[in-house]
Length: 364
Image 1 (tube, one colour):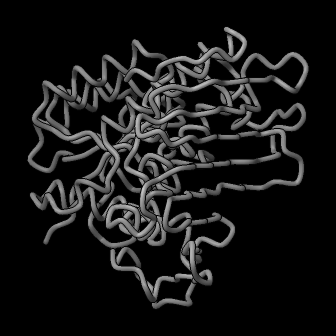
Image 2 (cartoon, rainbow, N blue to C red):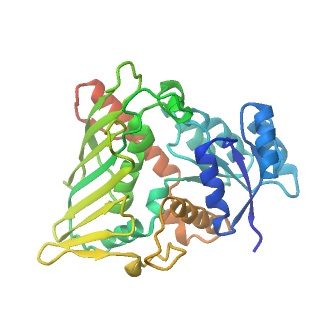
Image 3 (cartoon, one colour):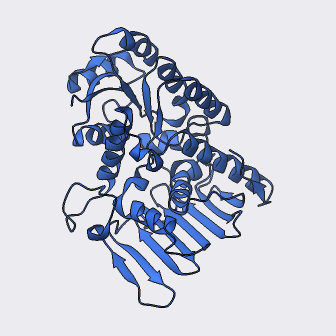
């Protein structure tokens, strides 16, 4: 089966997430990168494309106009730009009938999110959002356990994502745009909070109805939140919480999820992604590994660690299957609904915090 021809917007020389997407897309041989508008600087875009051996475009509009008319034109495009630059290329390629694979969060503002949603709903092409952590095997196993009733009724949900890399001023390129409200739209809640939100939703199958948030900017002069504590209420009666921080000194990438039900509990931590702890109410805890995983979302034998890159690669493999007509992976691949849910989470958290933690309904 021939690889799906892939384009890329953003991700030029020195861009972290662009390189991650390129590695993941080619890991299983389902995609071939053939074209890109890799930078807003035409010279840098051309140089980056030359290094990769692909067709170069000075901007995404030109690529969206030109590629559909080529016999060897792209069939899908990966958008790996800062948040405020997701909407315009997503809309352009969806209108051109090209599948869109977009890095999270969906957009920087609700208006941009609506533009993407309208274009996706009117297009014959599909829209995918790369929340890579939900593609890790043990989190797919956690979802299966919850769905089959192994935990009983869900009572408590706790998600955390703790980092320390923005505990002080930073002049790195990554910090520059992530701390700029015009480009990021939100701080920690957008950058890593949407991961925690999506992971809790993915595993439990439930979306909170309302939340109460306390967002803080711990670093003096910072214009976006860098710490957030959020309480959640579910329609089922369950309660939850999300704590995300980028000023937690000593924390590197501390994503974790705990789900407590009437019959059992689950616990998972990113530093040990291959271990899922299942604790029955009336028995000893069990440590589940990929040897017990039923999703077959792995490429090496159990005991050979997999992680961040493989999560992205799992998504790209599932996306390729969907593009080719296999609907089997649809329920586990984030799409427009996951993106809109994340944007609703950001908006509700910001509104609640502005009202001193008042309870706010979450409305996608």
